[in-house]
Image (cartoon, rainbow, N blue to C red; front, side):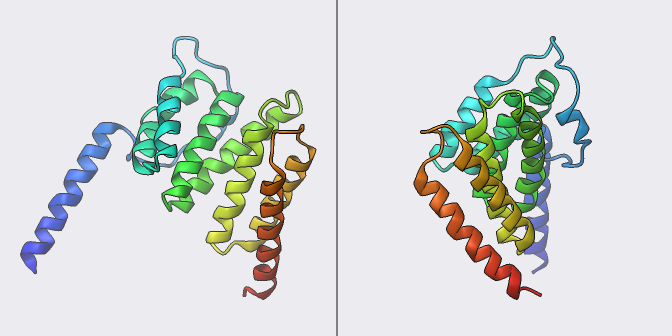
Length: 194
């Protein structure tokens, strides 16, 4: 038993060391204002390759790999594009891979920032409406899995309103129907949850 405990401790220490070297397992505490407000740093290039690769890995269901790449380049993305749709989309992708990997608390944390960025910009430009529907939908599902049904209902409602207002072809009618069905389930759960 003691040998097994030492082995587990060694594996955990090695995992933490490797994560720290990769630059993403340090600390998920941050000032969200640094993501939502500010001016882009012209000396920092947006990590478009990391964003694209993470999208490919997500489609291959390699969520942990996509998560690592996105977290490893998150600070670079934040410095290069604070408050922009580009950073909002980056945060949506991070939310999606965290959610798909079952890491709901972190998915919600990063997803709420994405939502704030994209909502802030939505009234100036409607280009990111698909991304905005995506993040509101994923936040709703995340809150639902965490049994935070009132928040889930609100996010489902937000996603449905946005989806119904989106230009033709941006959001499928089947997705809108799915959201309405899931909202109805969340409303039932909210009514019976203590």
